[in-house]
Structure formats: structure tokens, C-alpha cells
Length: 382
Image (tube, rainbow, N blue to C red; front, top):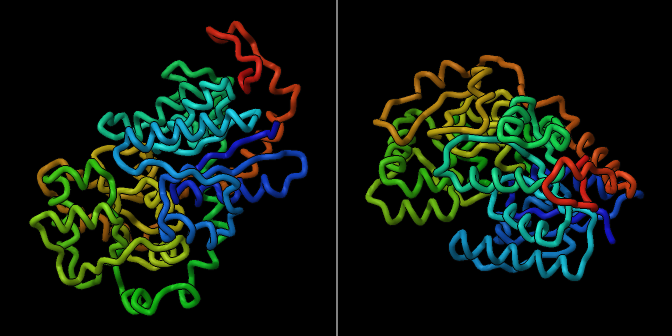
């Protein structure tokens, strides 16, 4: 029996967990398997990130059905359930709020303790599939790593036991601190086309959330926002689904909006660090921008990361409402300073140390049956 199964499935997972994986790999007293769910599968959505962040390659990679959410989730559960039939672990570790974390159901069916990194974040927007997924896994979990105290409070308000929630800070701070020197010069890894686009002032843009791209009004408002940005190029690494939606729509982007295919972590962070500001609906990008001092427009009806508003690093743009330009507000943030609210950069070490302690046999056996409605004798709970 190995100590841990680490299950990831999308490229932001690779970024956020990269140091955790490397720290675990360097430990002599903990054994784990790294499992890739298959949710992201093209090279520039997955393999590039493994290479650039020097992440150990997965020990197991699944092939899953790529249709609807139901196809991806059911295929992930089936693959993991079958894997757990043949491979035994003391605990299964998941990160985030994607289809992949629903594989925690397979761990629960095998009575394998579940660890959730990035627990208790809430947007309170039930339209978002992520909100459903993170709620489910948090209430299945035996150990939750919450990045901030207010996230922990949200979990406590839902009746999750304080005993299983540990506040760690956000590991994205660790990754940025460790790689900051690589974001200053893109000569070694940027294509000539992107280097040419970034030679002068520019704005960075991303858009991928289904509640934005599948809703006609929201999508048109976001396109109007990009088209309003004048006098500088807008560099837009556009996901393949967004490209498909744009082709089928009757809206057009201005000539200064430059569409490129998805790019690697170093390329993206170079562009982010050198941009005037970023307009995005990505939670991770908003965090990254806040940490490195780049203003952002957060194109969201709701967010699970309100800290960026609290420190005045971001401007809210709600695509569901009548168009109201945020451009003047965000330009006032250029060159201003704020405190990073996401942690000190030692989150990965905190998580790995806790996993090591929990992996010791005697700690797995400690639990209070009276705390739960059923007895989980092989549980982190305690």
C-alpha cells in the first residue's frame, strides 16, 4: 500500500501542485502515485506545463470520454474506481474544483480517505459547475487545506468539522516566487510573433468560463469590452472552445485584438508581468496578477476570490448586466501598490509536512467515531 494517490486533471492544477509534487518526490518517507485524469489532453494544455515547471511525469494517465460533463465525470469515476481496485492507498489527494475532483466519489466508494487542496472556496453562484464540485468534495473530505481563514469560516458555516480544515496559504504564491526570474525575459521560450506583439504596451485577455461564453449577452459584453481597449494591442490566448463560440457568433473583434492559441505557463506569465493590466474570467489569473502587482478586470458575476477587491487590485465587470465600461477604473490602478493577500510563499511545505504526518500509520488510526455517523477506521479525521 502506498501513502498517497495525487489526482490532477487540468493545467492550473499542474501549476498549483508543481512544488508539492516535487517536494513529495524528494521525501524518502512517503510514497505516492501521480495520476492524470485526462481532462486536459492536448500538448499545449498539459505536457508543456509539465516540462516548463519540471513536474514529475504522471505514473498513470487515463483516457476518458470527452463529451459532456456527465461523460467526463462518470468516466473519471469509473477509471479511478477500477484503479483503486488494483492499487491501494492510505489517502487520495485532489486539488481544485473541476470535473476531475468528482473522482473523489470513487475514493469514497472504496473508503479511501480524501484530501482536498483548495477547500472551502465559495462563489455562492450555483450556475457554476465549479461551485457544485467544490461543495461536494469538501463534504466528502477527511482533510481540507483551505488557503485563507475566511475560506475556513465558509466551511465551518456549512457544518464541516474544524478538526479537518487546515489553513495553509495559497501555493500559487510559492510557484510565482520560485519562477519570478523567468518572467522577466521571454527570449528563450517565446515565439517571434508573440515577442513582436509584446514589444510595445499591451493588455492581456482571457475568457473561458461557460457562463460567459455560452450566454449570448455575456459573451457580447465581453467582446465589447475588448473592442473598447484602444491605442494598444490586446493579446488574447484563446481556448479552443472560446474560438469555436466566436466563429459561430455574429460578433467581431477589433483588429488590435490579437488571438493566439493557448500557451505555456512561462509564456503566459511573461505576458502577464509585462502587461498594462489583464481582463480575465480566470480565478487563477486574477490571483497571479494580484500577487505580481498587475491590475485586473475580473469578468465575473461572482467570485470565490473576493480578496482581490479587498486590496484594490481588481475591478469587477459583470457581463450579465447592461454594458458599463471598467476601462477608466482599471487604468487608475496601473502603477499602484497593494498587499498580497494570498500568503507568504510556504504553502507547499506546510501541505507536504501535514501529509507526511497524516501518512504515519498511527495518525491514520486516530479518529473519534462519535464525530461521524459512520466509522471510517482508515481516516484522516480526528
